[in-house]
Image 1 (tube, helix red, strand yellow):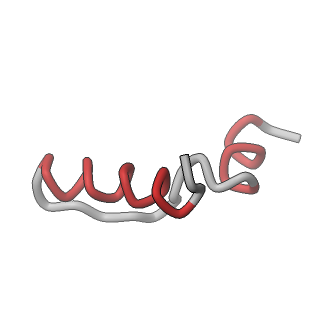
Image 2 (cartoon, rainbow, N blue to C red):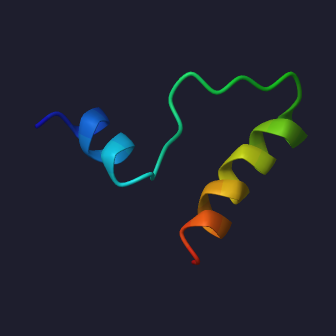
Length: 38
C-alpha cells in the first residue's frame, strides 16, 4: 500500500480539499483531528 493511500484510509489527510487561505487550510487539518477525537 502506498503511503498516500494509507494516510487517506486512516483519515490522516483529506485529499482534494481546497482552501483559499492559510486559515482555511488549518481548519481543514484541525477538523480531521477533531473528527478523530485526538
